Length: 208
Ligand SMILES: CC(=O)SCCNC(=O)CCNC(=O)[C@H](O)C(C)(C)COP(=O)(O)OP(=O)(O)OC[C@H]1O[C@@H](n2cnc3c(N)ncnc32)[C@H](O)[C@@H]1OP(=O)(O)O
Image 1 (cartoon, helix red, strand yellow):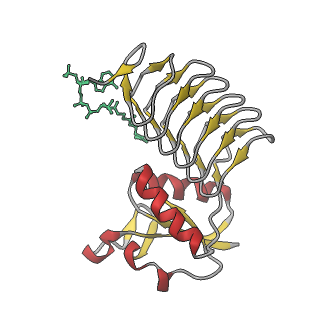
Image 2 (tube, rainbow, N blue to C red; image 1 turned 30 degrees about the horizontal axis):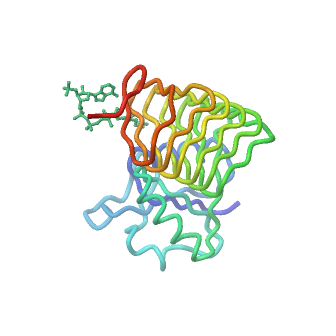
């Protein structure tokens, strides 16, 4: 078993740590966080061992690394740094999640408790499938997107890179959401959404 180092000790990082501890895959779980320099040495039951900006001397070659940062663009930047250093970036699945054996999952993607991912879905790198979200058959999620708690993607939905589907939002089957989009909490997306759009409401419309 190796050590898991999580970069970012905020709420999302803690859910990663909690999920990781449920898997019993890691000998130790520790955090790096910018607030270490202000005296943060503990978050919940886990130690913060250093500053995330000075990670290089703190990381061991056999560590596994995950990024505990909810912002999709920042998570992308840091994950790419980690991968360029040839560090092991696993994916993480909570034991209570259902993930079909046919699903493809990229490095650094995390799938939290009670999520369900159905047959032939494809999920890119560094994605977050949050608590109780569902991603149905044949969905394609590009890298670094975030499906918030309780959001449901119907079959064949496509989500572009770095897009964020808000808590409790839903999509109609085969809808395509572009890159860098924001789908508001509780929205029902029934039409395609262009890149960099913010949509909200039922049915979802562009934010004016
Ligand atoms: C584990 C976790 O916690 S994961 C985190 C999950 N978080 C989320 O899902 C948050 C999703 N974010 C939202 O829904 C946001 O409200 C957004 C992105 C849609 C809009 O945010 P902002 O641009 O800051 O909009 P703002 O809060 O200023 O509201 C603007 C107007 O839109 C309305 N509005 C905001 N969000 C929504 C929404 N989801 N649905 C319908 N209307 C909304 C507001 O009531 C307001 O209306 P008004 O002008 O009539 O008063």
